[in-house]
Image 1 (cartoon, rainbow, N blue to C red):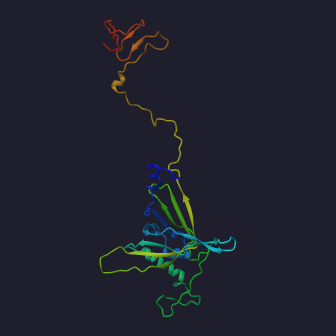
Image 2: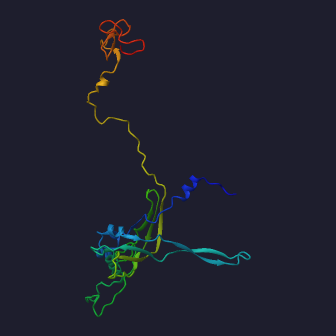
Image 3: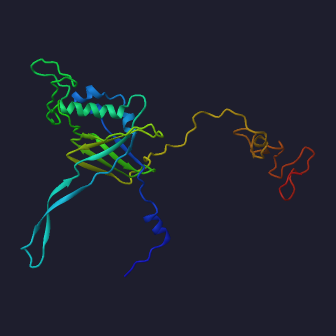
Length: 285
């Protein structure tokens, strides 16, 4: 049987979609293997991460095999392996001062291919020499400083404007495998973009849903920062207060602080001429 929904329920469920423009990319240049870090540096890491204008959240699938003989007329598919995407693409805006997005990935790929590696026989090798050749480096492990993989720390974080929910994808063993061609032309100018494809072993997703927005802090007892030394306003000085002003240990003398008149016989407050200071309604006469 269908269940009815109110307008407020529909607004809560369907009118708050996630937006594709809120994300953050982190490529940890400072934590790359030493051989790469020495080449590319790490001073412009923040600029590189901010210049990533397009990427994609990774996907995966399950590899299955068929089982046909367990049940009559039924073909089952049973999972036996999780398959990750073979690459992920990042598109960067190229800055006009250093062309940093192009240079860093070109140097990273040059290091992987071993184009600038020293020969063991002592021969000086140049990339433009007639005897140019290369020998690809070993990928290395987490403890191997000569490998070319970024073992961890390369992440894509998807979040929303309120910063309450987020999904962080961390890529294990990532490294660039291609740089797309970048057309240039004498026609109308447009932004120069560099698209890099990176391979990785797998990704790990970390969920952060509805964290506490503000920490709970116990409020201390209200205390003044300093003592108030200002004089009272005239209206507050002249307010009518009735009490004993004859002094401690003396007979009670009822006195009006506003008029200064007092009555020693517990009768009504009197003026200087002996007439009552207040009428029957309590108003000053």
